[in-house]
Structures are given as C-alpha cells and as structure tokens.
Length: 117
Image (tube, rainbow, N blue to C red; front, side, top):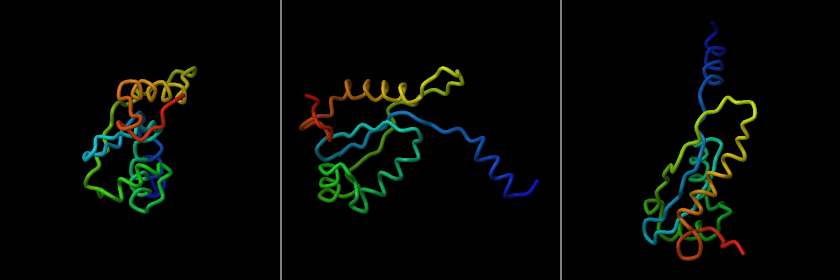
C-alpha cells in the first residue's frame, strides 16, 4: 500500500477522545471549564494564550501576569465512545460540561466563567 494512503487510513481509524478539561491557575485557584470534541484542542487554547489572542480576557490577563508555568491543563472526564445512531455527542458534551460547572462552581473569584443570572 502507498505510504501516503496508509497514513491517511490510520488517521481515519484513530479514535478521537472528547470530554471536559480545565485550565487552572495554580497561583489563585481560578478555573476555566472547557468541553471539547477533541482533547487535542488543548494545544490550540495554549497557543491562543501564549499569543495573547484568547477570548477569555481575565484568563488571558492572568496568563500574562503569572506566566504559563502557573497554569495546569487537566482532563476532568472523557466522554465514552458511543456507536448508537441516536447518540447526540453535542448534547452529551454539554451535559458533561454542566456537571463540571456545577461541581467546580468556577464563577467570580473561583473561576473564569461569568455567573449566570
């Protein structure tokens, strides 16, 4: 088999891990909870923060203030693979995110989320 086609096939067969992760400021304890369809997006978030382009302004400010060493990216929970045709990945991720928002309460002094009113 052609090496290029073989790599392409391997890529297609690779399982994508999805779920919820946090970005935690180890200096002040603030947390951002993020649901993702692919944990590789953590690299993208890190890149945004390193380049000053994050849309989370408070998180971006703290990143610039404390430096990248002050932050930890941690996976909270992985969404199990589900081959059921009725499975709604988007809803499942949202429910998982809500679970972790409820558990961690990352609002105000505790996190980078805006309090729901």
